Image 1: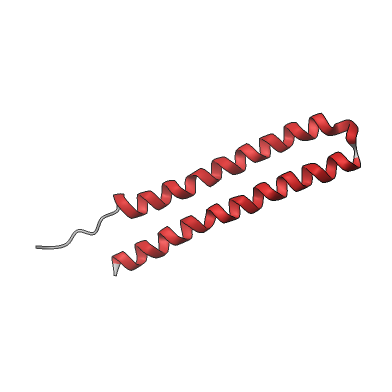
Image 2 (image 1 turned 135 degrees about the vertical axis):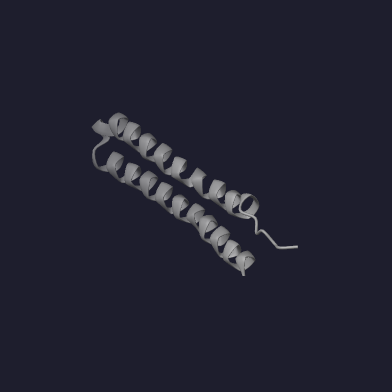
Length: 80
């Protein structure tokens, strides 16, 4: 039973990578829209977009870490 629950946990942690990709796409899409609407603030908008990209990517790096922890660190203790 523990192996099945571990598989569900690993799958859920891996899905977070797709959600992070959507977040990064939203950030870059918002950057393009803001630069088109107000080109004079392009440099400042780019700085904010890079900050958002970095924070979203940092969150995305936790997902594979959690998947590996669930897969390899948490082992079932079988009685002999």
